[in-house]
Every structure is written in C-alpha cells, then in structure tokens.
Length: 136
Image (tube, rainbow, N blue to C red; front, top):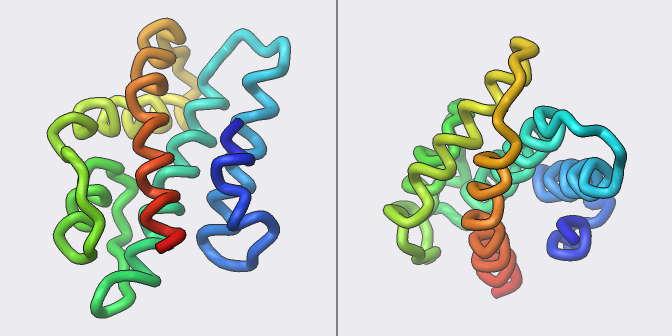
C-alpha cells in the first residue's frame, strides 16, 4: 500500500527515493508475522521524515530542510515555506506520537501497537495529500 502511494519515487536517487524504500519496508512489516510494531514505526517515521525533507528541498524557496527528526516541526515548516496546505493541528499530535515511538524503537522499548495503529490510520491520508502536492 505505501510503496504504491509513493510509486513516483520508486528507485529514484534522492530523499523521495529513500522515502519510497521505507514505504517498501512498511509494506513488508504489514504482511509479516512480526508482532512487534516498533520496526514498522521506525520505517513509517522515516518515510514521513524523508518525504517532508524531499518536499522542503525541492519546493521551498531556499531548497533546504532542518536536521530535526520531529515530524510535527517538519510539517509546520513545509506548510510555512511552500504552497502545501493542510490542517497541521489535525496531524501534529499524531506525528509527535510517531516521532516518539520511533525513538523508543532506537532504545529497544516495546510500544503499544493498538494505539500506534490508530495514529497510522489518522496519518495515512496525510501521505495522500503530500503525494498530490508532490505531483503538482
């Protein structure tokens, strides 16, 4: 599902292409018997981070992006510095949750998969919005 959403970046050698690679990993974990969703969360966070940074690099006035891994900050900057428009308030808490769970993965903490999946369900439409923006 995710790889299909990011298909325009398939095997492209830039940040968008890296986002697509993480989408492939998310699809793998969606269809695997692995019960711990921490690895999915890590790749999902990377998918968003690299997609935000790709769009900032290619669509903002200065073609630059910050070093932060905080997804909420990256979305706010994307809205501020490009023509991309969305309801930042709708997504901010869920992006923060994904950022935190990806950090938990780095320290080998288990996360609550049920809550994580709710965040994913709310955020997945944002991927569609971002991909529509990337096409135009």
